[in-house]
Amino acid sequence: MTTPERILIVDDTPSNIRLLTEALEPNGYEIFAASSGEQCLRIAARAKPHLILLDVIMPDRDGFLVCRALKQNPATREIPVLFVSARDETESLLRGFREGAVDYIPKPFQAEEVIVRVHTHLKLTRLSHELLQRNRELEEEMERRETAEKGRRIANERLSALSEQEVERWGLTCFVGRSGLVKKVISEIRRLHQFSNTNVLIAGESGTGKELVARAIHHSSRRAKGPFVPVNCVAIPADLAESMLFGHVKGSFTGALAERKGWFELADGGTLFLDEIGDMPSGLQAKLLRVLEDGEIVPVGASRSRRVDVRIVAATNANLDEKMMQGIFRQDLYFRLAHYTVAMPSLRERSEDIPLLVSHFLEVFAREMGIARASLTPKAMECLMGYSFPGNVRELKNVIERALIQSGGQAIEPAHIHLMHGSPCKIPVSPETRLQSSSDLPLNLDAAEHALIQRALREADGNVAEAARLLGVNRSRIYRRFHQSADENL
Figure 1 (cartoon, rainbow, N blue to C red):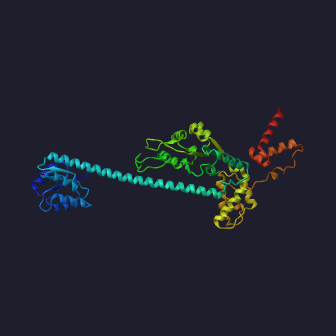
Figure 2 (tube, rainbow, N blue to C red; figure 1 turned 135 degrees about the horizontal axis):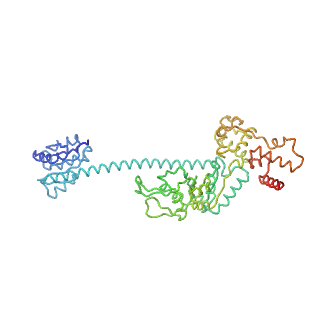
């Protein structure tokens, strides 16, 4: 059951109070009465009526002074006041409105008119309160969104700063390593130096250093003085994706109390790095494609587009060919992104770089920890060389940091090496030990080579690449041997 709305009637004539009460009470209102200005102020402060019907001419003080006092008191300031008076000259009306009244009912009054006006002003008051409440809720929601956005912005800035520190810390802008695969990546980055508007797609497993390569591409280009804006496509909230990418104008949606630039505008003149592009929602892919085709963005709620000069460097650890075949990733977007592709090798493909990376990490961590530079025992290094590192360089870095802590700065032994998922530390047997231990190899050179290849394949569980590594040859030599054997058996 709802509480009835309260009305305070202020008049020094009892008959007027009675007539107004008889008119209003049957409509469900709770009536309070006062016969003087002082009594009105006391009742209004205590009962908090929803509306006051106030006479102008009263013995102690007139209604204008009472209305002024009501509006000066924070407790009664918001209560609407309707004057009821026989004084209807213009100056009297204007003074009433100047003192804060919302309406003026002339005497002698008609009951129907009083009821309609009271009902109208109470409804307006309710709507006003609802609007104020909604505005407060919107302000609170906007504050929450602004706080969340600020948090995301700070997080992105910290991540960006951390990533830049990691570039220096890991030395991967110098691409620690001497393998042919690392030299190939360096060559491709140098080749892109003259093509600062070419979009680039970097493919590779997690932990191979795709963002570091993206930064190297940016900083070695003519866009180096422009911003580098990293965005993780997986972390974009679905309901804010368009606003975060393209921005929005004030009032474009509930809570949009100010204009906001999106990532494209923030990256204007520089590079926008879209990490894990393969996981971008399909709806957003279409909007991104439009921007790449036109070079223009339309902020949410804007009526006109804005031109942006942005180079896109995207990265993925997913197989985009499979995603395109499944209809999950747009083929036309792929061709817009992959003007040039860079393949980041996994660490197991360039395992010869592990000793160099280990040496670099040991030096960096020792400097950070304020201890003397430690070293790995030969057995510990063999342990690392025998592991596939599914987490790549990032995993190797973590393994070395933990090993250095556990060793207390002393020489790192195999016992200090903790690999992912509890993988045991295996010390590989050298190819010479494995393959030269057989005393019954045939003296025929071709037959001996065939036997060694077969044994290497057994040691490598059928993995041709691993067998080639054990033998110290290129895998193409093994394939040629297979074809030669097949031809001989025809």
